[in-house]
Structures are given as C-alpha cells and as structure tokens.
Image: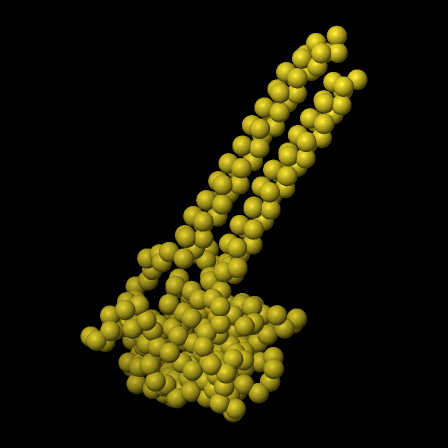
Length: 294
C-alpha cells in the first residue's frame, strides 16, 4: 500500500517539478530578453543620429578628416599648472538682430580654435572659463551640486558691441550687448564629479538680455554645441579625461557603469532562481524518501 501510494504521489511531484522547470526556463528567457533589450537601448544611445540643423560644421583640415578634426580643444590650467577645465567642441554662435531696413537677420560665428582663454579655478565649488575672440567674450560658469557629487554649467554669458564687424548695418549701433542663458534653466549638462560629459547630439543654448539689464539691442543669440566632450573640477595631474558620462537622444544622461550594474542584477536574479529551485528539489526528494521508508 505504501509503495502504491508512493507511485501515486510521484506523478504529482513530477508534474509540479515540470511546472517549476517551465517557470525556470521562462525566467531565464526573460532575463536574456531584458539583457538584449538593454544592449539595444544602450547601442541606440551611442549611435550618432543625423543633426537637424541648417548649419554645417566647420571644414576639417585636408590632413585630418576624422571626427575630432572639426572640434576645437580648450584647456584652462589653474595657477598650479594642473588642468581644471577641459573642453572639446564644434561650436557655432548665431545672433539674431535687426538692421536699418527693419529686417530681422542672423549673423553666424564659429567658436575659434585658439581664443584667448582666461578664468577662475580658485574656489572649490565654482569655476569660470572665458573665451575672447574677434570682439566677442563668451563666458561659462561651472558649479558643483549642493552635495558636491556632481558638476554642471550654471550660466552662459556673451558680451560684445552692436557695432561689431559681424553685423551689417545694425539698427542700433554702438551698444554694449550682454546676453545670458535663462535664469530658470540653472543646470546645463549635469555630470558626476571626476567624469567627463560626452554628447554627439547637438545641444542648443539660447541667450538673451536679462529683464533687468536695460538692454536696448533686441539681440538674441543661440549657441550650438556639437560633438562635445567636457570636464570641469579636474584633479588629476595628467590633465586627461575622466570616465565618460554620455547624454542620450532624449536629453537624459546615463553613466557607463549602468550596463554593468544591470547585467550583474540580472545574473544575481537568475542565480537565486536556480538556487531556490535546487533547494526545493533537494528537500522535496528527501521528504519523499523519508515517507517511503515508513
């Protein structure tokens, strides 16, 4: 009787075991699908998409036709000789103004390869990079987050004269123009400290006269930043880039350590599933064997 009872119970146990086997297979397949989806998503982040812009990048030299040939490199060193701000970008400034015919026109100016650089790298929570070129001054203020774990650009500022050579017959000449990025957008390109911001996607910063400045020029500037690689608050003597922190096609940001974390979590989940199933099988078999001995 006990043997026949054991025979009757074994099919039920085998059926339950088969169900668990199927569940385990589905769990593994789900983990693999999630890993594949993550890989596709990350590859989409790093794939360069065509730029939707009426501007073309400046022409590279004939001796160098690679990706970095159109980007300019700017390095600013602190008083101790260590690089504190490093930027590589293909930049264009487009300024909208009104001429004497009462027409709204635009004037374009590429960010040069060799501007006069100045700035500040004294304070631990703020750094400033200033570029002077062709009668223009472009300034960027870098700050750390409140907790000190991240850095970002807090302010863009562009100053020049409305009579600059770039403008043809301006309606309001001889004005000192000062344009800044909006105060309601205080955080551009947030990045963890020690890492460098990387973005192939074109970024646009709009600058206009502050409301309380009394500016009468009516100018509006757009700063187009392409193929950007940038880092502030650098502390390495080598002056080399830190690990990359990429922007995405949607404007959000991702850390290069994210794929490793996701893969590790999936591996742990699969391992726990297999271990749990193995433990259940062990104790279930022991229970059946013990029952058969009675």
